[in-house]
Length: 595
Image 1 (tube, rainbow, N blue to C red):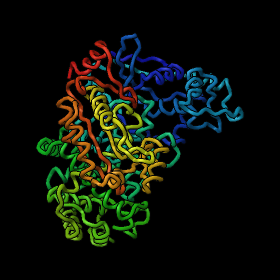
Image 2: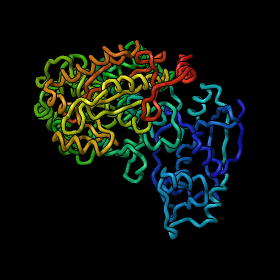
Image 3: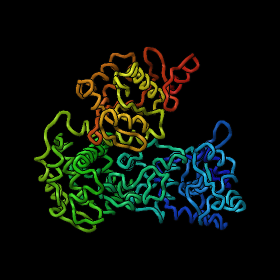
Image 4: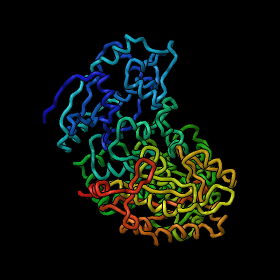
């Protein structure tokens, strides 16, 4: 492997950044987690002329001779530098003057970011020049060997002093177990994305821990873990949510509650250990996809039932441990999760009235065995048995069970709506089937356009997955109109607004089941090609979010191009277009040549 050290000015790096040439692989990289103080300290070092740590990049040569870089070490530093250029924070009360960098000025003029225009708050032009001319120490090497990239990242980060225990475990580990834990963690936090992202869009899937990074879209206090008081915000920053999910996953895979300690969890991430071998064998037998479905689905059921009972902050903590203060409730949460898992997954039951379920769990902590440090399996088994005994009489038999619909798929819906902000082609939202005019008729041709959109999403490519959601507004004007017409209260998820379809089913007088059936029947009778038609119908679902029903039409990745009555449709951003001509059709077919 040829490693090339060189200098790269901040101006050159910014140009590469805004050209989309800095990529982040989420298998390796944690989220953007630096505080404003840490970012300001880096800017201070640069403007003082001090050296900063080396940045390590793997590169792929592009057809035009340029290089696209995958960041192995230095993501937080690069983000801090570029964020300062784009006026996301100040240094000693001074903002970078974007007039000193033409590319930044152009982007500010286009509205990509808001530039400071107060001359008294701008950095002196000479300091701006020094900042842009500062030479970053960079080492780059060709990314031709994925195993070598994994090894290098692991060596760099596994002993990093600033990494948390869980981040050290994950560093450079790409086992099936580590991967499934990482993917589930992203689903629960709400930062699901493609595996490789442009550094410029990382804020959209990063966490604002203390309210000082408004560009980071995921607010710690709004995540399930922090909102319910299960973890503190700082623990989320240190990836303790991943540690908790790894712990739960091991118990699920082993078929019963397991003991826990930091050292024991380390062994599950050590590829040479016996514990790692056991969990890998168990995961192969269970199936990674099924494990994710069962764990995320159980959490979704817990979340939905709890929010129906009490949607305020720290509700779970107040219920199960009223004397906790600001302390986390990991012990009680483990017992609640495992009890729900047994009832919802193993026994295929559904929680009854939330007042009964959560009323039975009041002051649960007082009934549990608590220990500091290592936790024994026997103690956990007793805690889970106690918890299940308190709630099992309040679970009922229902078809389909909770895990398969309603609350059980709400987290999947949340993640898709968050992804839709940056993956506009892969997702589409419709407020409903009826017009928002005075007659409330079924919109002309809407169901046909829905079928065409499903086709367009599928034609993004073989690795694409997406969905179309009915009962969700993508703008505030429609949301306000629906609230005015139908007397409902919308629920916001990122920049989308859930309004549900129950209101339209009532207007049509057909009930929710009949409403869904009219959509399914139209798709079934449409000219949508196979296997896409069958795939969409088999995954058609109805999610319940804050008591509002959303019809979910999921589009799994396809191995061949799709069509509607032999016409091919594609997505360009949020628009669906019909392909015209042989050349365009061949281009779509070419996306699937290697699938």
